[in-house]
Structures are given as C-alpha cells and as structure tokens.
Image 1 (cartoon, rainbow, N blue to C red):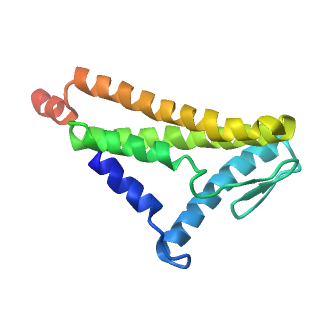
Image 2: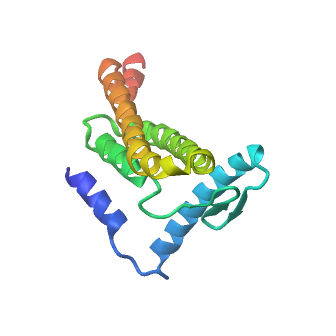
Length: 163
C-alpha cells in the first residue's frame, strides 16, 4: 500500500504547468493520442491528430486521469512489493507495461468508435467499463506473473545452479 500510495501521490501532485514533469506528462498523453490516432486513421481517413486531441467523426482528448495510469501504477506497485528477484521484477514491469499500453490504445480506439456509433453509451463505457477492464488486465498480468515466479526457479539461481 505504501508503494501504491507514493506512486499515486506522485501522479496526482499538482505540478507547475510549465514544469519539467508536466511537459513530460503532456508528451506522454500526446504519445497515446498519436499511437491511437494513427491506428484509427487506418480505418477512418477523417482522423487527425493535434497534440493530445484525436479528431474525426468523433473527438477525443487524451487527458490526465483518463489515461489509464491507475492500472499502470497498481501493476507497478504490485510487482515492486512482491517478494521476487529484481531481474524478474524488471522483466515483468517491461512486459506488463507494454501490454497495458496496448490495452490502453485499444481502449482509446474503442472509445472513438463508441463515440461515433453509440454516443449515448460513451460515458458508461469510458467511466465504468474500460477502467474496470484495465484493472482486470493489470491484475490478471500480476496474478499470472506471481504464480509463474513462484513455480519456476529464480533466474539467478538457475544460472548459478547450472554453472
């Protein structure tokens, strides 16, 4: 809980708008907009990207608190808190965060199409369904990794045992 609390405090801290952390965060949000926008542009030629705005038949602005960061932070805290070798933790963090980024890009793309085809359902899908799904993805990845890391010998122990 302490790790998660610290990570969430860092995320929610009111940084200066012109500060380095906010510039980094804006780049992070724009990165998501570009990944999702480019994917959407393959199937909808009207899609354009401007900073953190995806526009087309429906407009989406990728903003802080709507970026699925909560799932990333919970996953990160769970991996860091789990008693396992650091090498395994690093592998899990890299692989798990890649999966969460891909899931979030899928989330953004699906929200675009919900906005286009069922705008009345957008708020429910955006605020209730996708946040839950992102937490499920993060939790499932952690549970799989925790089981795997408990069942197989440590990477460093396996290397020294075979030497």
